[in-house]
Amino acid sequence: MSAASKAMYKTLALAASVAGGIAASAVFGQVWKRIAGESEAPDPKDLSRSTREVLIAAAVQGTAFGLVKAAVDRAGAQGYRKLAHADPR
Image (tube, rainbow, N blue to C red; front, side, top):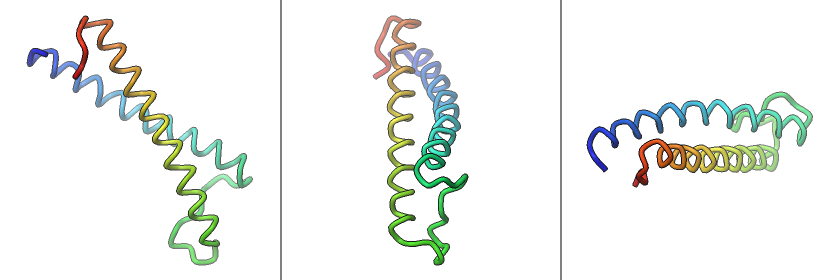
């Protein structure tokens, strides 16, 4: 990959990552509302919440962010290949 192609891919990947983070937050918020019936996940430092609830929220959040990141990275690589006719590796 040439230096120009690499710079273009890094710029696109950064923009996609920011958008992906915003999307992952929205996905997690909706999933958490359905699971717990609350608008916000519990703060791990809030000792009035159970450890079980905090850990479930963390697991759901990690899963949501991991799935969205993989989807965004994959879509970005495929889009780059279509534009540049080269793999982004």
